[in-house]
Length: 241
Image 1: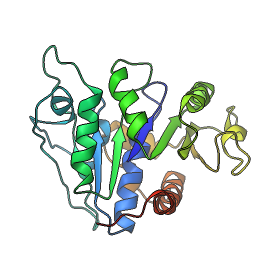
Image 2: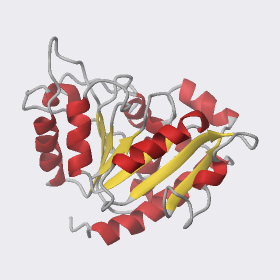
Image 3: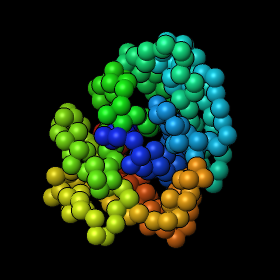
């Protein structure tokens, strides 16, 4: 399971993660599921436009034993998506239920992408549970939050691999040297820089998946991340389904 973390919302975590899930599914035979635990449901909206469910991530985490998946076939790639769904009134989102959900999905999927709220938001119980059960951590920051992301990385178990992405980067913005020196970066071997590009911003505003665009640097980097994650997953554990 790949758990996506950021210090705050709005850094492009859902955009990057959903695009990597799509790219990985398109290039492999693996069964991929995207679990959306964010309030704005951006990633699941981009992967499965218009799909709404009554029983989503939030209802399961609050204790309801039911889930409804969304699947959209496109470009020979189908990423099953579990949208957040409505938050039940006065519900508590429980970490033990997240463990149950991951265990349930592991029976049917090779790869689980878990999109979490920012760590500065509520729901700390599910974030702690995700950190505990994840195989790989996927960290995303924009230039203004790069130091905060590094502090988050330092609090994670050092025994598990980290994929780090600096998103929305401009050439004159700070931070690129911190994350782009692959092999020597303090973020580790799997570190990437995604530039700020107008077409990507426009696609996100329309809640469209930017991984399907052509001629943009974003897609080149996403494809490289997907290929590296594929190799990393094979090192961590060999999918057998």
